[in-house]
Length: 197
Image (cartoon, rainbow, N blue to C red; front, side):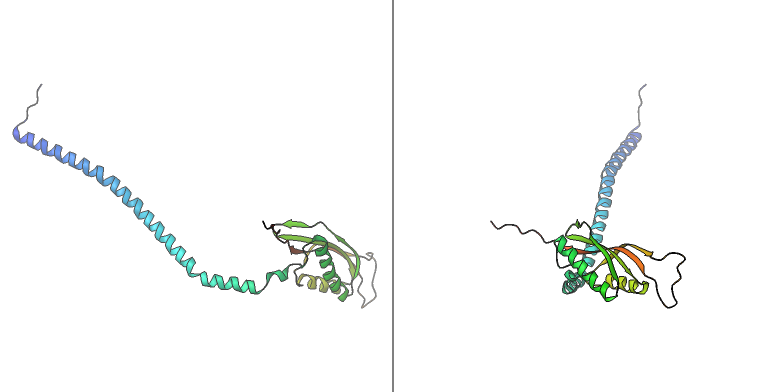
């Protein structure tokens, strides 16, 4: 069966086909263009956001440089031991502790240097102390140790009474206690000097 169209119908069909083809071409162009536009809008927003963040960071440069200069003036090395060799650094810790312990009239029962630990550019040097004395003097000595320069740190603190349970001290006298702790500090490890060619 052959379909025959009148001239008006053929023109209408041709116009409809032309409009359909034009619509398909418009959609084929518009959709990728819109997606690309959305992609570039997002990229532009992201770049603007990054730029504003970088400008805020750059605006803080003077403040940060001033803080760095202030920190350099404070000389951070004063918080570290002078000696970097493990034996000398341990002797320095012992010397500092001995001065504070004697000033507070405590008795040193024993001291023992423990193994040092290297952590990057720092070396942790520790000495184990066992002291005997009265509680107020021990409190004062521990406070002075932890507030000294270079920084000293008290760790593994054990306090024991040296008197039996039934012991009753005379009024106004304080019994001695036994105190054991690790005292450590940090030393800077010198950078190795590379040989000149």
